[in-house]
Image: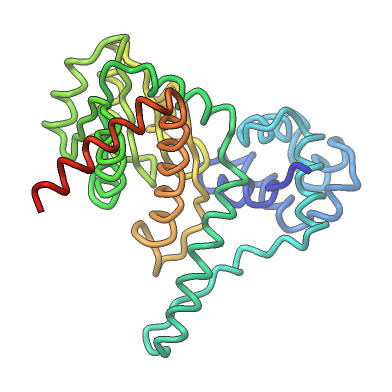
Length: 282
């Protein structure tokens, strides 16, 4: 059963236009009423137009209002936890408290990401990357860690993959790309200017562009042909480098296995060759 309606709404709220945000906030606060109401009634209760509700559904990548209702109904039937179910991390707590709260938040971030991550977009990304002549991965700051992880994985199975971790590196790589290549931009916020500029340059040169960002509209997502989303329910104490990083790494693992399982025997041979080369140097 489709679910994730409430997570999608909460994740997208900060990036929505004012009227769509108003509708989203009403729906999050009154999910039971929405599930049992028509689009006309929800629009009236939220004090917005019916067109706003329809645009909101499109912003969430849903087919329409009916899909939104079905997803919310599934959330409610499974006892979907409220947004504050992410646990605050208290610096004066015990080590056991830290273990429990951080682990809980990491697991919750992955679970929430599964509700906003599109299988169709994943398949497109796997196909594009599997057939690419070269892959450039762009990331700055905490996103650079994710970029390097993807490069390491793909290099081990004999893909030409390079990382750009700063503007000069990124734009140089992007400028030399063409229609045979893939540019992969990583930015949790979706606002990183270096990544936006580099994806746009790569796209202008004909490369396929892929983004990995938090769910919702953003300049980075707009610069990409294929969008991979993670949950964006960040608390300030976890901002940028904790639960969101775990969710992004999980998506990278999914991509890697998706690519590696194609032409499996060739990729296994490449892994064995690199393992032997590394082992012989130790």
